[in-house]
Image 1 (cartoon, helix red, strand yellow):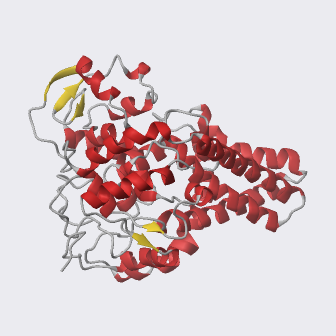
Image 2 (cartoon, rainbow, N blue to C red; image 1 turned 60 degrees about the horizontal axis):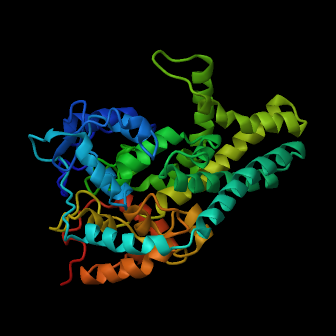
Image 3 (cartoon, rainbow, N blue to C red; image 1 turned 45 degrees about the horizontal axis):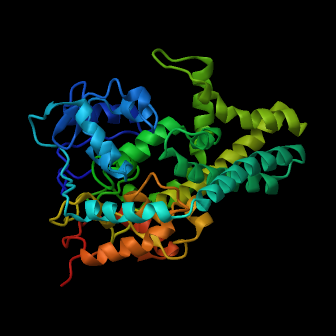
Length: 431
């Protein structure tokens, strides 16, 4: 990662291996923020200990963030003003030190203005899209199991590929629910070898709040194999990704996890806690074996095939859809002077023209991504209804949505990995 953050993140989070350690990231964040056993929001310190069990979004968010500055999470996860009115009941004292984060949420700034404008229209947006998202997501998971079972029963790899495709899309669709209050559908990813708890830390607390910075675990979690920041890189790190991402890392991720996680369940590691959700990934091979009328060895072969193909498809979508491209800001590039959090999110994202506004494609390929980052707790089906007010607000602040083609974003990922020279002009610069 770059030696110093150009956006102003005050500490370099430690690099992790191909298997990013989310708990280490949490420890790093606590060390940086220095909130002790309290929670920090803006310049205030709060004690939410008695509120954890009452939190409408679920206990997870407050349990995992104790000792942290949660300003970005608090602002982006609450459109309503009600949470702000409750803070006074849990206030302890003013913080003694400035925030470690550079991002601002000024009342007259872009993001707070946008939130106020969206707050006015959100009550009039139809709720049918949420129901449709639920139907899509349920169907994807059911289809994953159905095609996996008949692929085993008839030993047909075409059915296996169909299951793998639905498997990968189920993971992406489950991401919609991981941002929301605790719910059943967020665990659909657990059925598909993607741990919902780790995903909430890796993707939401790290990536969503500190996108493309040195505090973004998704940006640096594969170093030194993949280096996304603009800096001097070994030849293999620059160009080897064309080979070892699609042919090695993407297809082997879930098969390797299937082995390591099974080993963990059989031989519980010291200090590790086992929950019921840790067994859910193995419900798929269990039903494949029970209903597929094949030997255990044959069933495992088909299951691992589905995991490999599904991992490849998911990797191709997740890695290349929204954030990494030579034209998109990443830590190490010159940042804009304004540190408004909403502006920064727009600087770090490009949406794909072919996907924007299409409910199903948005749900299963991380579409309408700029709006999703600005309002992550809203169902993906609702996002397209926000475009008029978002665009109107952006015009007032002289901002534009960054739109690119799917092909450009796919190839742009690998061009970004090969990029060494930082962009010297800040986002929005016009000569």
